[in-house]
Length: 213
Ligand SMILES: [Zn+2]
Image (tube, rainbow, N blue to C red; front, side, top):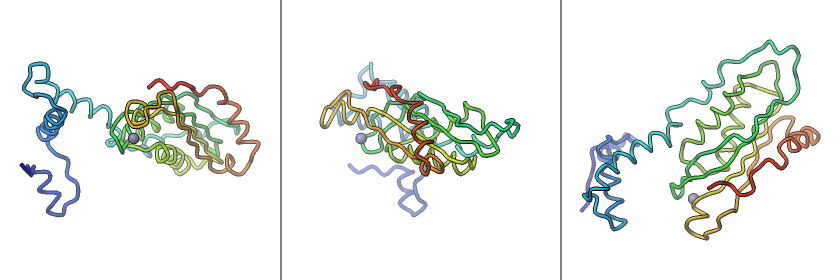
């Protein structure tokens, strides 16, 4: 049976992707339960579709956050501070866009201020805003670095992410404990090997080897 939902019908009419209703999203979860071999009418599963949809609102809240706006408020009274600002060990909770399973890890973010700095928690919120979307780690790393670079216009930005991918640990090749490391270096971090080394020394040994997936 081919069910055309109202949202799918609208999308087919050429309007691009349309957000389905909550009821449509819950129906999709019941379909997956059936596909897995379950009976969605079983007592223990009755509220599961509603719970999953609420979980999705948490996991993917990044789509309703604007990372550029998060960095809008900056401070210029920095008394000539021109050294590196580094925020280490920012927990990453994301989802792989190929398998829709968790990516769990840590990010380290650094920048060399130009004339402005930003509240340090804002760096973590930018990481979260991009992580709470469907991602691949390479794109996540680049988006964080590029946004900080574009909005703050610092002399350089560095982002390193180390993460475990459940699509590698619980399915497919089944390699728990493996982690993927990505980095993006811009400005002074790319051009000046001393700056890059200073940053890498600051985060050395901190990355979790057994990423808690
Ligand atoms: Zn995957």
